[in-house]
Length: 474
Image (cartoon, rainbow, N blue to C red):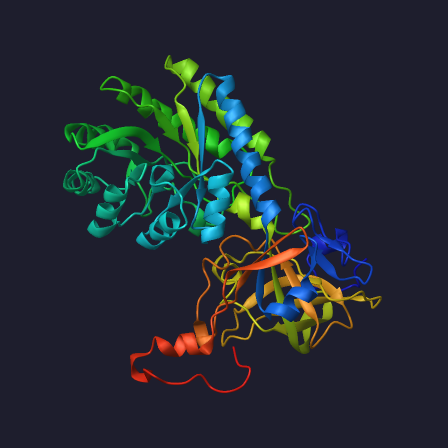
């Protein structure tokens, strides 16, 4: 039950302060008999004591379960209509050696979009044939590495990449399988910066150019056309946008069949998740049924066989498995006048911020927060959780409720932070990036180590050999 505050969004009136909404938190999240939040059988307070804060926590079982679930959903639906399905984990969401191995173990492929992501996936032991490579501006060196290593598919993002990809394949002595990324024109309902199939943006080629690019691919014996690729954006709810994109791509797919085989259709990713308790993500089984059903129905209308399908989820797999733990610092009440009368906004500062969660500043993303280290019977208070950076836009959680006695030294946990948090992390204000720790069956292990000030200084050529300052600075 919220206390009256005209600054509080309406969704908080329906929220239960302190509750761990199951659609937002990992399935293993619970409070122990001391009121502490546990994930993967480990208390976040114990993790903070061992590893410090800020700290990214990733529930391994949640990641693996969601990976297996999405693969099963799409394969079952595709096989029911006489096709197969391939699921690529979108490494841009979060990629480490262990996560890449989890994907391999669960039968998924991995999508990479830079030389760095490619190198990491290969070093982690993912077979090159199970990798797909994206990128709107792939360098010649990246294309050459992809060809030499035997990458399973390269997504061509522009007409000029055809010749460069073919040259890389010729130098490597291989035939390189390629997909053509198509800008379908479908305007997915998402943030402007997350919509990637609108006409005026950097990705892909226009539908009207598909025939010419495909012909250029087929003229090069070093290339083999797998099919078309579409991606309409990120954090998308429902099936409608994917179904419409499939219809548009399949019309072009049908026309290409006259010139040779087109075995696949890749519809990208972008499946949304819940970030706050008032949101509900579309179940992956419903998405798979709707997307594959739309593909099958369109193929029947067009009189063509259903191609094998590929999808590329990242956020849906890893996002809900992540929780970020902070230590609270300065607490400041700010009195404001609103149209509905006077109000107070409580600012709770934490030891991280936009350097470990850029999404709030980038997209106005909404998050929730919970007191993680103890129980409290204090009345809930509207808070805004903010970071320690020199920006007024350095906000982690725009609005939520915390117990009125939450303050300096308490641990705060922000769920649904497994995707696009560590991946987008920066060293703004020379703040070192947090570690990533996996939890499973009551045990924890470090996936990515914490940066130190020494690490940051070591990259400054004017400070070669400088020692890290004494003390506990991080």
